[in-house]
Length: 340
View 1: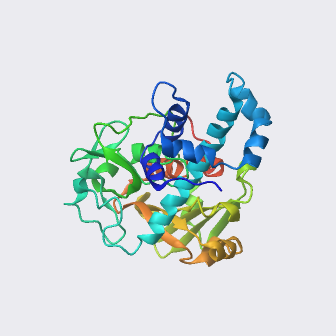
View 2: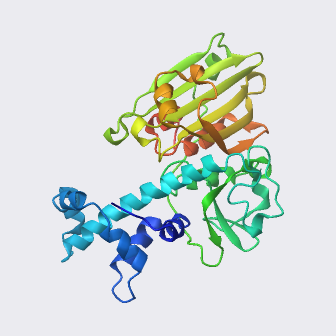
View 3: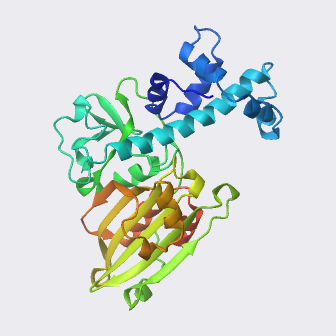
């Protein structure tokens, strides 16, 4: 049975470059072997390893290795480790949801910050190094919203733009942090767009809620879906959008939930927040049977960011796209008709 030592799990969970570092350490020949790493690789399922050694995709990327057994163990081990870290993050958020100072607020560098009722703190309390947030000699990342440790990299870039930077509150990731001097520096490329070509007049004139649902084109995402609604409430129009994980993914992948309040009379948004929603085995089945407006407060919601300040429609569009990074349906919705 596959076993990941806790020290190994927590060490890799704190590293935003976990996949690359794991492979580098596992292939290292000029340094002593890590007993915990070797024990983990030795515990991998033999049937899965045998299947992997015959996989065309694996062979394409690893045919240069003389030791295909070792290559298969590293290939499989990397994915097992990433899945375990994703489950570890969800368990941490769930188990500490009622704590006054959940991780990472137990870190000395944050002891003088008082998280609000949503466990958020001002982004303005941190400096930015180009790839990570820094405070009192410690580096942090914005809380990941998918199993990928870089899932909020582009969202953070958007949040750092003025005027958001001065008013937005954020949740640092409970696992991804460490001493600033040794914390890995990373960078990724992606273009984001602000779109004002939605039919804003039609949205402003809504008398009844307008609902929509998207099913993914990507076969790897089958079983998941994205629900959205524009809902008029007095002089405001509320936008809610949720990406719901497949039933089989819920233990390692939370839902991503965005809520915004649009005021047509000012052509601007006055509130925007993003959160993850963690579903248990029964809840995820129930959620798949309901539309967004029927789901209520189902699942445990942990906010990633929140801002109560005027935002342009373009800024709202950029943040929404970056929050739902890799969700092609959301990006397509906001980018429609938008020039580069």
